Image 1 (cartoon, rainbow, N blue to C red):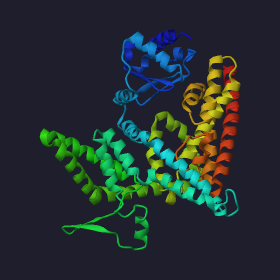
Image 2: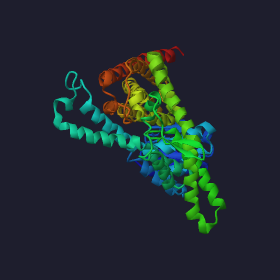
Image 3: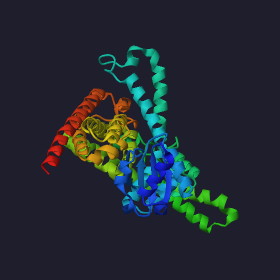
Length: 480
């Protein structure tokens, strides 16, 4: 392969180097911010052997090339254009200028939560391991592994602490990440998170129980004004709003505080004012909103049953196309943090059904497509990667391009999600939304069994329906 020739052809197809505002690459894709996307020649790009697919989202035009190749093609593009590579963050920032307010809001949530996903995933997967050790009925009837083999109890207790830490102290992670995103000092954000989970406060998990039982809630009395001494362990919304306020106060103070006093007064006043406002007004209001959100979504899932799962499963892939699925990270984090009450997240297993269905449809396309060798090769690799949780190559490189596999995929996803919802399958961790996702699923109510059955149902329906739709599509073409 001539990487220089590929770079030249890509530049020509996207309207030349003068049409590029910013460019970068990730592990598999070229990420470009173009002045005018209407100048892109999609047909030329799709005919190139090196290009596996293209799509536009969040103000970025992305060209899927593949790991190990994308960096070499990008290096040649740098030489040809003379432009310096931007970071992916800079490209995102540049692309977001063309986004609407809702797209910018979704991107903001993504920027805050994506960096902390590894910590949440680690805690969640450890929770899954603890579940294997402590849940009854997995290895023995009505008994857990540690009930029968007591020597594992110490290990289970240790893993339980490891697993709960990222969720209990979640405000610290969010505070650090959100402060960076809002332009504040990240360590002030972390400090604010530490204040909200201080061990001297009543634990947030005990607060609802204390209210139900009519217990006295500890409080501070400040000139007759009572402020509840309740923590915000595992809370998302209060910390997001508090950090936003912190950033506004800090940036405002830096404009008026004299330089010689800036390092002394700005951190002091920022933390003091924000923490007081959070405990007095912001925290109680947003805590209630957070409860309503998680309780409402859980109620919809429980009440909607199979119909609710069907609708969500049908819509999940179209939501991914718009990029709105990034906003689900915040919701999932809250559902998992409150898993003792909510049972976990229903979004993860439905996302898995969507990924499995996209992979099944792409693999069906591999057997259907005869003439186009390039598309056939993309379909096989993309189909397998989608089954393992990486769905963009299958969705954008094959299914949307042929159209009928995408229809087969969303129907398969809808029916598989209906089964998931019928048996109330939930995840207690974020992880790979695909075949390896078993460890993220709660083992209660035969969750693993139903998760596996749902994947088989999803795969078979998406695969078979794609074949049926291909025959109908061929018949229409012949009729013309």
